[in-house]
Image (cartoon, rainbow, N blue to C red; front, side):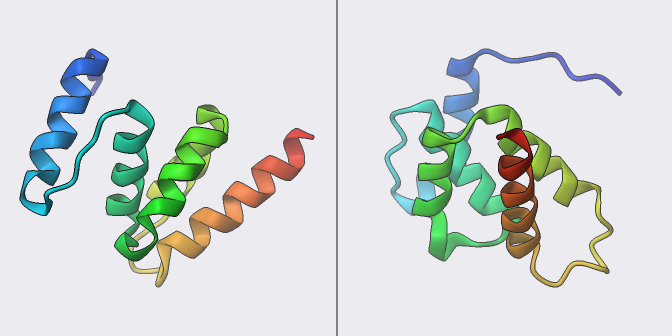
Length: 96
């Protein structure tokens, strides 16, 4: 099933609606992406780390690490954020 790409404005609005109850102010796209990563990985206490990664690391590397975690079966993963960080490290080392 293919999804149509949505505009950046639509994506920001979606994230603002999601975070409205938490009183978070999302002004930039990288903030929204970092918060979405934190939500997917279940690691809200380190949300600032994911925002910083979204700002500084190439998005294609983050996406590959994210999809690596999503492709794993949930029963085998105890800590998806650790798996994400491991895969991110591997991808960043291989890029150089």
